[in-house]
Image (cartoon, rainbow, N blue to C red; front, top):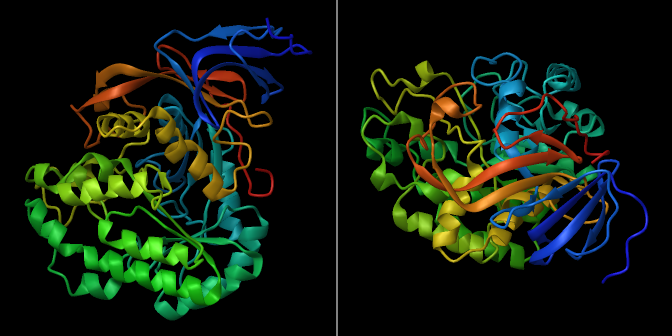
Length: 455
């Protein structure tokens, strides 16, 4: 028998299967004061006030980290809010989210707006929440203050964001913003679609998805990503490409990294799950920008993940009310663009990953460890001593059919409705406390507000 580990623990998890830093193994995890204090063999003698025995069909995962969530609170709380968004996150095994700076009113483009956002979230968060700042036309003088106030980086658009209060940066302003951020090594995350290319593309209209796809061509992404890469190369800045949908951009990203350019990239579950060919006429729940592309493009994105060119998979949860999706006319040209999927990301990615020969450890790398590293969340995303005791108890061989009326999202809209998915989140734990039980219900707000300095 192994030697007993000294000291009592608050909780011990005994898992015949867990995903640790080196992949899948069996083990016992001891938790003390909300942190992981021991990771030992399964039969280790760990004295604890409470022991959780995982079933043979369950895997202990680190809590997922979703760095791309639009909560829209305050100001557009009818679209989503901190209570509903973080409930959905917890039910989906996500224990940390980073909130995007736009669609809320005011947008997070100065320290006053950041404080409003924090005050709104403080008593509603069921999981830990951090915040991105915004880099917009005219706010370069605000960036250092936001950085010192603890935002995890800055988001910008290179074309109209969809809301007038979050204006884009033109090429000169992007250059100037990156030169400002490189002074304190802050990260710029970029919605990379070129405004000129979009302006000269066909206009989106009508119920046919193909017409909408033509209005957001791959070239618009490719040109914008090339621009961001070259500025990062010249200035030495850190940049991150958001929600990559164009597989054409993968070779230039790989080449830039080989040259030492500090560029990372994410994609999203919907780009890995759906294909343009299968989207019915008028099904505006599938509309997002950049768009879901063709089947061949999807498979190339999966290869980009396998090759490590794409770093992570995050939701880009961008909800709205059913009315804004314009189901009454099914017009892709006027419907709001955004996919609601925060609660479903793990199962959606696992469903597609397993049939392509990927392991649950791969999914954890893409959806927990790598997003945590991107944001500098040093105590998140892994089952390691010293990390926060955030866990997801996942049954990878279980399955369910998505019913939007059973999701915690504020509005019952999602392209996943009616879709069978593999893998069920049975429990979620935050800093050693169970926040979602086997009934799928949350226990109440227990999340903390995170800053870059305290992460």
